[in-house]
Structure formats: C-alpha cells, structure tokens
Length: 238
Image (tube, rainbow, N blue to C red; front, side):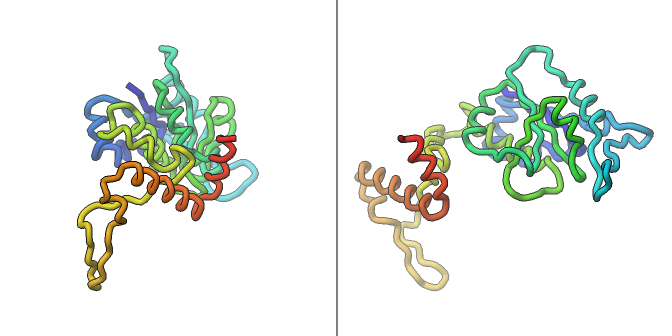
C-alpha cells in the first residue's frame, strides 16, 4: 500500500476529489492511504502562526522553515521505506507521465503544500524536498496540485483501474497523444439537424485496420498540437 502524507495548512481539503469514482473505491479498499498533517499544529505564538514577512521586503508572507521542519519530524520515516519528499511549486520541474510512473512505485510520498507567497528556501534545501510543478500557471496553494499528483500516481497502481491495458494506449505513454474515441449512436444528429457518422473503419470489424487508423490518428494529433513529443519519440527510436 502506498502512503501519501500531506503537510498542509488546510487538511480539510483532503481527500477531496480523491474520494470519488475508481480512485475513491481504491481509497476505501486501502490500496492507498492519505494522512494529513496540519501545519498550524506546529505554528508559533498563541495564534499558531506558520508564516512571516519576507526578508528584503516584497508582497505576501512566507511559510517559516522551523514550522515545516517540526511538521516533517512528526512523521519521520522510521521503517526505512522507499520514500520521497515533494514540494509543489510553479518553479519546480514539470511533472510528466514518466515521473508519475516512478512515484507510483514508492512506498511513501510526503508532499508539502505551499501557501501565501512561498516557502523559506532553507526548508526546501535542508530538508530535502524536490520541487515539482504541475504546469506553467499559479494556484492559490498546493492542495489542488497535490490532488492532481496523487490521482496521477494512484491510477497507475495495479488494481485501481478496471481496464489496466488502457494505460498502454493513453496519451504520453509512447510520446504520442491518444487517438480519438467514438461510441453510440453510430449516426448522431445534432440539435441543428446535421448528421455525423462514426469513422467507417471503427465499425468494419477489421482489427488490424483499426489499429493502424488509431496509430495514424495519434501521430496526426501529436504533430498538430505537441510536436515536442514527436521529437522525443524519434530520439528514443534512434
């Protein structure tokens, strides 16, 4: 069972979306576990403050390193588990499917959720947090980003998805975006009276032709919107 330990100022935000659908089912079946550690339990003064003004001036407040250390020490791994520590930040290394695959095989992942203007860099460096970003944009805090990372890992754990073979064909698995999908009705008449057919090859029953069509569509879509993935694919094949 993989364990996720979340250092956060808002523990009530968890499990959030992870409590639903197949991910929620896996949570109830103890395929993974989420523990939240409230940073305010380790705050200073009577108000249990966890932040302070930045040295050098500037807007916003900064999460204190001593607060982060105390919270981390409260969950120090004493069983020598295969673990890692992650701080979610827009300035981190971009998260991708390969990274999620690596993380999904760990025993324990400790995630630090930022708030305010950021976290004292000493806490990140000295306590050994890896900085990871889920995209080139800024959120109000790391809690939603943590749920994104968790879901990406959890769905890769054997037994979570109903059709694990779909993992082999989905976007990014082979540096290609996934091909388009179609279902009933075979002929869809939209609200304007226009009729739209399913591609003929998909109802032909010819599995080799379907496979070739899907591969071509994957390449076509990737070339159109993510040429960087095609370059990676070609480099890997060389």
